[in-house]
Amino acid sequence: MLLPISLIFAFFVIVNGQMCTIEDNTDYDNGYLVMLYGIKSAGDCCTACSTFEECVYFSYIKDPNAGEYYQRCFIKTSGTNKKTNNAVAAGPISRPPPPPPPGTCTIEQNVDYNNGWLSLLEHVPSEEQCCQACSSYPGCNFWTWIKDPKAGAWYQRCFFKSSDNAKVTNNGTNAGTISKPPAPPTPRTGKRGLAWFNSKACSDLKLMKGVSWIYNWGTSPDEEIMPCLEKLGIEYIPMQWGGGGIADLPQTIYAHSGHLLAFNEPNFHAQSNVAPDAAAKLWPQLEAVANKFNLKLSSPAASACGPNAATDCWGGTWSPVPWFDAFFGNCTGCKVDFIATHIYTCDINELTTYLNALKKYNKPVWLTEFACPAAGKPDSFEMDFMKQALALLDSLPFIERYAWFGTRLDLKDGWLGPQVDLLSDSACALTDLGKYYNMM
Image 1 (cartoon, rainbow, N blue to C red):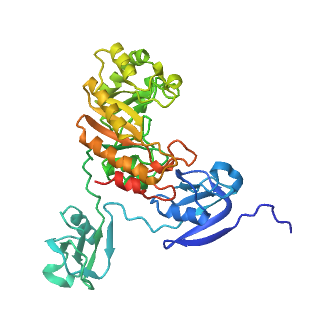
Image 2: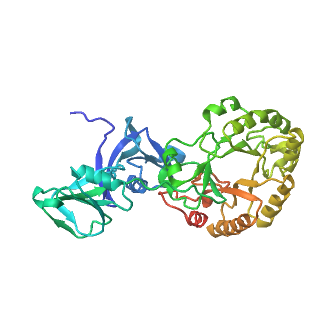
Image 3: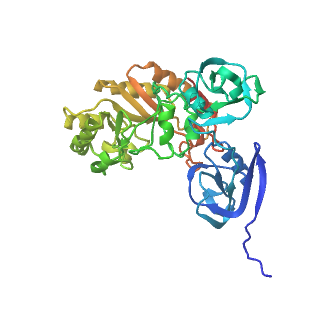
């Protein structure tokens, strides 16, 4: 019998008490959430998968000939579109069953809970109705229902309880729990936000306990994180990135926000590249959208240029102030509720001077991208800058919000590099820098 040249086989490993099935020469193409870097084996990729609540499948690039994608691990929610791929090992990870949805009654026959009594109801015809009555009583998460007709006046009484302690067998009662939805969170407040990219995982977003807002340079968030934004009380802020597509903004904008960001780095030829007079001509369209959805509107996010300002940026200047001056000169009376800008520096004095130069516009300032480009320097260098920068930004009253860049940077990005990452390259976990940024 002839064997195929490429064999697909599976083996199993146990990770944190969960079983990973690793299928060699296999890939799953759908359900992508996150890409991780520098993962040494398919087993390690499965371990990383186990740290994400949503991950039920993974794909691992095992072929050294895959170039920059070698040893990358893809976290996925779906095993659909399975295919043969000799460069990849993939598989599912077993997960414990999810908790019951809110309002679900769990009933245990011939059981009683003797502690945590809150109140009771009489003449409740069934244990299901006892459970549902518990759902609307403050503090009630457990209940006991008297089912034995021989119990006399106690028959069909429903006891609301806060505890399932002292669980005992009782042939005359049924007992159980009801799952309740968590209380809706209070929307978060505070200056601190995040330029969000390279992740579609709510598991990652849940780690950001010190962050009140995010944006991703687009008009709406990834649909995978939409359900958890409201649950976490985090505001997603849409952006009109450049001059193109403004006519579609009313249809594409995420309307559950209070703000709108405009024109990413218009003074950079390689970014949105919108001249001040062109931005002023487009501005009425942005104002119309902001007014329709009752949004505060940022200025265009003209920003500090890099070392090649003479060739890379409008007017050949490093400072965005000339661009802002020209924009406001062409846009008198325009609706601009706050200034948005970016700067990348490791010099706290330069950051201070830069921000103070924007006070001339008499508007709150949002620093929507900042970090220290310190590739090749020790991690402590980045941490020292962050500590100084956060202390400065939190102390300046005209700084309304700010956002660190970034979450998980690609390892091939040598300009900033992964030392600025707030999220681990290899798991759903905060880096030391991320832990400091998310201190509350």
